[in-house]
Image (cartoon, rainbow, N blue to C red; front, side, top):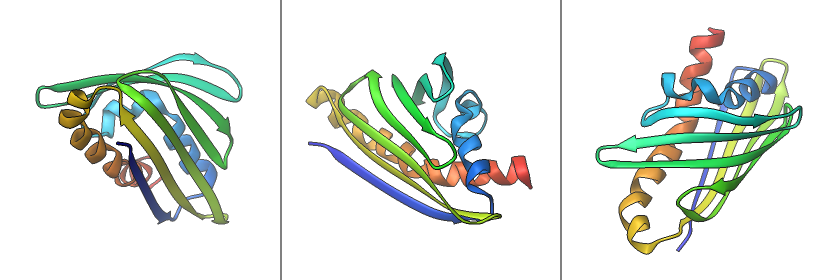
Length: 144
C-alpha cells in the first residue's frame, strides 16, 4: 500500500532561494531531524544523485534518489536505491513575486517489504511531513 504526502507553504523568500536550500543536500544533517547523513554521489548541471541516511530510535534507512533539477521551479526525484518498491517525489517552487514563493512537496512511496513498511512507514511519513517546516526554519537561518 503506497503512502502519499502533499505539503505546501507560503514563504517570504524567492523561489530561487528556496530551490537553493532544498538543493543543498549536504547540509540536511545540520538542521533536519532524523537525518544523520547525506552524500552527493554524482552531480551535473541539471541533475544530482544523492543519498540520505535517516534514523529514529532503532530504525535506520538509507536511500538514493536521482534528482532532475529544473532551476528554480522544480526538483523531481526518483528512486535509485533503497527500501522502497515505489518512490516518486517533487518539490515545486512557484514565484509569487520577487520576495515570496509557494513551496510544495509531493511524495508517494511504498516500502518493498510489508514487514519493513509496517515498522518504517510511520518514521518516513513523520520525517517527510516535517521537511517543509525544517526548510522554512533553515531559510530564516540562512537568509534572515
